[in-house]
Length: 256
Image (cartoon, rainbow, N blue to C red; front, side):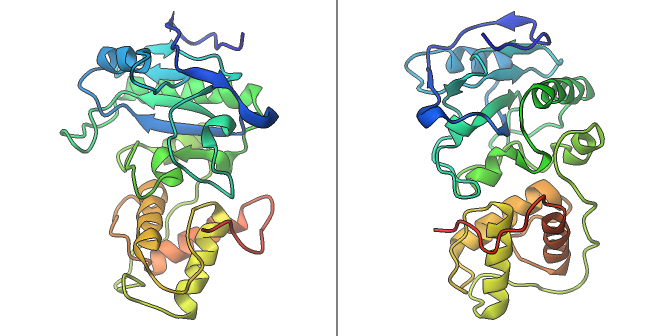
């Protein structure tokens, strides 16, 4: 059984399966619970009627519960995509971070909770072949459905502790950027860059709803000061610098 020494409790969820086709976890996927309390979330993730689960849950005080063996496939990503892969559950380890979320008052993530998430994430990536650019938000892999863990989650702090991919975002200027209704080579270039990083974006040259959602998800992770779904210079330059830092540069991404 694959378990961490950092979990204070083991509450097995029945909502598990074997990873499909011999796949192994090379993604660390972060969520927020979006529920009233960590205990409520834990009960739901362990309820056979819920159809959902996660490997770990970190409460607001930094307490960590493990619910699924890391070698098994938990049910946390839902319909999702990253870099050509559609079965994210078979490729990921999921951490639920208790936070009431955007539909409630979306509180800050307390220091004790952030430190616990960092410690857990570091423990996982020290044991697993998870590269920095595959430490992702639920909103990255499902940008049209999800917002979590959201713009208040401190990805820079995570990176400075040795977890995840990050560059300091380019300053925001006064340009309007690309947005809904725009078409042409500039939009196609943006779509190719987003897909090269991993996002699910159609390669059409039209700035559609899927492109807007991917841009907003990117901003929520990497340019948190303004999340408007418009691809301004700040967004494009930040994305370009992240792509340069990848271990390989795909010629094209895995869009629709």
